[in-house]
Each structure stands twice: as structure tokens, then as C-alpha cells.
Length: 468
Image: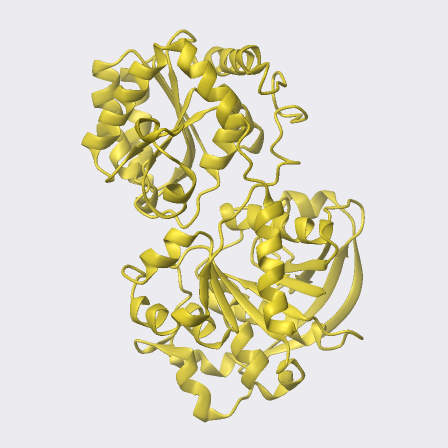
């Protein structure tokens, strides 16, 4: 089966969040099961594109109302990602040192048009075009209704919703960005008075999935205005839990780690990585180390960290290390705690791939008090590296973590509040004193299988249901 994934992000080329990890892994695992999956993404001016080689395999031009942009199609040639990677190069719009910006409506509309234009010139059309999030949400509409793309009418389209909070809204004044179509279909673009690419894709894609079963159900009640639409379209919607790339996330082979380890040797391996973290960030190796890795945004509950951390550090013998960036006010408050709790608390503002791997390996507990978590990959990385997750029971966190009091292997709380974060840290600190139980839990969680193999099979079954 010829499968094309279209996405704004793909690891290791461009990563802002979990979307990149999914798009960088799912096609690889689909190919491992005998399919022919490829990825199309924008060509950005980032570290990866500066240090790798590409060949030009196509060209064309995109018309956005009265504006015209030439594009080239590039193919990565110097490394094997496990799938063929194509990149749409529109220098005036996409070749920037960032992924997202204020003019994304124009940038990603042009990207989607160019992708379909080029695909339409190929000898073999895709069997399935798999779109990821709102950045590619106009593709299913254009495949069905734009005159230029009528050849895709019988090509199956799938939409994966990684985060429904972001929908790509833009004004109807920009409707001429979209290639010509019969005006009677204009209503499919609209939701609440704006062109809404995510809503449009939910209406037009042949099938829609979220990245966990629980998130699919939650969206029917809280989806940033799309609740009614998702309930109406529920017959074609399904939740499929993400996996993780166990070839990248492998404690035995991970080149980022200070010391590699297996489930059987996790005690010495985790201790060596923890020692490096504590030496580097001036923390006490003898205390339980709590970590957070991610964006400092409301959805992650990080706005509660300044108050929660202060309470914890005033009353518990623990260490806290944070890796992330986001809301400037939250960053400022978290930085201010550094001096007050020297030796117990530290942070790295920004994102560092190598450091994140060492944190997963060296931390004792991972904090994920999310208000919204469509799937969550961090808790799966955490399990894989023998670090016990502390999560709020929502979305994919609810689908992957079971509390130790319910016979499970993690710590779960019901709400995203300062009180519950503090209470969960206190529970974990008490648990840490029982090192026999900790060692047993670490060995258990490192053997849980969250690889992409199962999820890739489910996606292939979904495609087959559309193409048979």
C-alpha cells in the first residue's frame, strides 16, 4: 500500500512537540510491516536541513489569490530514516529558522497545495493520504472539491488529531488562497464564522482518529468548540494510542546516556545518569529526583509549578529538575526559585534532545500534571527508562498509567491543582524510601511494551478498511 503522511513536523528534521515523534516513527514501523509509507513536510532553515543532503526531484508554483510562489520538492538522500522523506521548499514562506509563526495560514496553505500538486504528477497516486493536525487540514477538502485535484477524489484520506486545541482558524477574507472549487461546498470550510482547517478536515476526511481512545471520548465534551462536530461525526472517528520508537528510545543503545543499562542492570545505570545530572545541576544524589520535560504552557499544568515547587521544596527532602520553555511569566517565576532553593532545585530553559534522554534515565519520577494530554509520549519514554511517572488521569495518560494502589506501576491524581501535585510528590517521596519496591517497579515498567508495532498494525487495518 502506498501511504503518504503530510505533516508540519517530523523527527529528527523539525520538532516542536510530540507530533514530530509520531510522524518520525509511524511510517518507519508501517514500512517494517511491508507497506510503502513516506512523509511530506516543509523545508525549514533548521540545523538538520543545514547539515544533510537533498536532491531536487520536482518543482511547480502555488497561487494564493494574487500572490505567486515557486516551489521545489526535495528528497533526503544522505541518511535512512526508515522511510522516504520529501520536503516542500517554498523559500519565501517556509525556509525559516522556525516551524510556526503568525503567518501560518498562508505558509501552510501554500505547503498543502504544493504537496498535492506534486503528488498529482507522480506515476502512482497514493492509496492513502494521512494528514496530521490542522496544518494539513485543508488537504481532504481540496482532494474532494478543488478542480485542480479531482484526480484524488477516490484516494482515501485520514486525519489524525494530535491536539484539538489548535485549529488553524483564519478569516473568510482569505478564501481565495484555496484553489478554485464549487462555491456550494464553501460551508465545509466554515466553523463559527471562520475558515477552520481542523473542523474542515473532520468533515471531509474519510476517517478521523485521535491519538488515544480516552482523548477521543473527552473531545466530545471539551474540544475548544468542536464538541458538537465530533459527536456528529463520531461514526467515522476512532482513538488509536500512539507508540514510541523503541529503536530511538532504548537504554541499551542510547548514545546520549552517560551509562547504558538494561532492566536487569537499571540500578547502576540510572545511578550513573542521576549522578551526572546532580553534578551538573548542583543537586543531591541521595534525594529522590523529580523531573518535568515539556512546554511550559497551560495545557501541561506548568503554571502551577512555581507555587507547587515552593511548597514541596519547603517541606520535603527532594530534588527537582525542569527542562522546558514556554510562557514567559512561568519561566520568570521558575527561574526565581533557583536562588532560593539552591542545591534542591534547578532548571534548563529551552529544549535539548540529549539532556532529555539523560533526564529520563537519571530521574526517579516524572511529573505530568496535564490539563490536556491527547496521548502523551513522555510517560512512555519514562517507563521505558525506568522512571516512575506521576500523572493526572486524563487522555492518553489514563490509557497508559495505572496507579500503584490499583495494582499498577505509576502515581495518578484526579485534577490539575497545586494541592494534588504536592500530594503526589509526597506520596512518591514516601514510596522512594522503600527501595526494594522501587527496584521491583523499575524492572517491571522497563518491560512494558509501548512500541509502535501494535499501533502501526491498527493504522494499516484502518487504511485497508478504506481501500478494499
